[in-house]
Length: 283
Image (cartoon, rainbow, N blue to C red; front, side, top):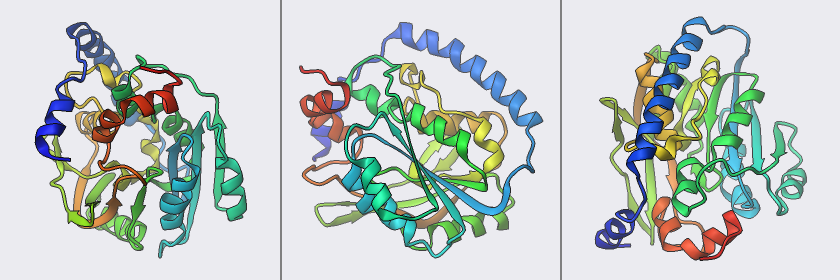
């Protein structure tokens, strides 16, 4: 998709002042609570060297199996548990995971509830929040790693991440990623949030005691950093978490089968289809 078309689509995304005002007070309160929780967190109640991987998903059984699960199972680092949380999946996700027959994988399907304004861009901004927060309740390992259902990791992602985190005495890290669109490979620049480099959400790797910091379902109301993972990182920086960015490219992102773009750009391109598939609405 060309840049002109991308910018044209994104300009139409709703952002009302009243939402910004409401989110300011909500955000201030959340950060206040985050600071208290971070200051008093128990840092020792986890299984040493175990990595808890999690994936939020909704009705993408095949792509979940062929991308996220496949790359997790190919990791050089084998000491992990893998928590997959369905946000009210109605497809064959449960059966596909069961057929894989790996005791490290756990699937939980929670009831689907739309707790944000029903439009297509808000699925991107806040859609994975409830499933992600539920997954964080279940982690048992010393470390947490996130991978979205349509992304892949390089074989050494976990091994590289744990080494980088330990070596630099950090609590939370991200790494670089490769985007593959129409056989063209691009390594996008990291986002700059609160003056700090931040890589793709599927490169999130951090100490498990930070599971007390949850994703914000109201992030879509903000004027900036509206995507749930951007908001999450912004709050980590504001409460003083030690973060770092690994230049190594360990995440691979590409369009889903039959699509031409990545992320919110594809949501906006396929608005009619996505409204039906994700919100059961027609436009």
